Length: 231
Image 1 (cartoon, helix red, strand yellow):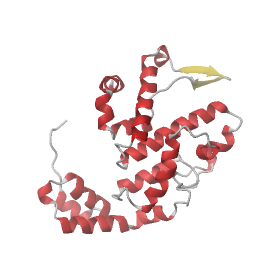
Image 2 (cartoon, helix red, strand yellow):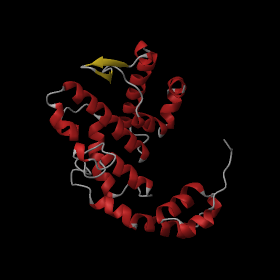
Image 3 (cartoon, helix red, strand yellow):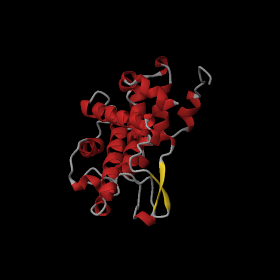
Image 4 (cartoon, helix red, strand yellow):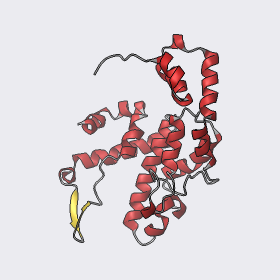
C-alpha cells in the first residue's frame, strides 16, 4: 500500500456533491488548505443537501427510520419499505452531518437503550413479534441490536462514553472466547435438514468490527485480541 495519496481537491471542489466537497476539505485536505469561511459554507451546504434532508424528514418521533433497525434497503419479503435506522443514521454521518443535529439526538436515546440489558420488548424493534415464540431469536436480536447501536454511536464520536466502551469490551470478550474455542473451527450444524450457524457461535459481525474500528482506546487495551481478530 502506498504511504501517501494525491488528493484532487480543486477538481472535487468543482465537480463533487456538497457532502464530498465538505469532507474532502475537512478530513482529507492539509490544514493549510482549509479556509475557515469556505469550510463553514460547505458544511452548511452539506447539511442542506436534498438527499440528507429527505432522510431526516423520514425519521419518526421514536428515533427510528422505517420502523426497523437493521434493514439495509427495501425488501418486500420482510416488509421493509426503506432502509432502517442503523443505515440511515450512518448515511447522514457519511453525508457530513454533525452528530449534534436533532435527528441524531433523538436516535441516540434509542441507541443507548439498546446498549443496555433492558428487556423491554419494544427494543426488539422489527423482531418483536417473531421473538415472542422464539427465545433464541430474541437473544440474537438483542445482541445484534447492541452491536449495531454501538457501531452507530462510535462512528458518531461517543468514543469516551463508558456505556459504549463497556459494550465494546463485552463484544470483544465474547468474540475472543469464540475464537479460542473449538467451535470456531466448525461453527455450523445441521438442524431440521438445514445447515445453520450454531447458536453458541459468536463470530465477528460487520457491526462488531465497525464498533471496534472507531474505538482506538479499546483497540490498545485489547491489543492481543485485535491481533487474533485480524488473523
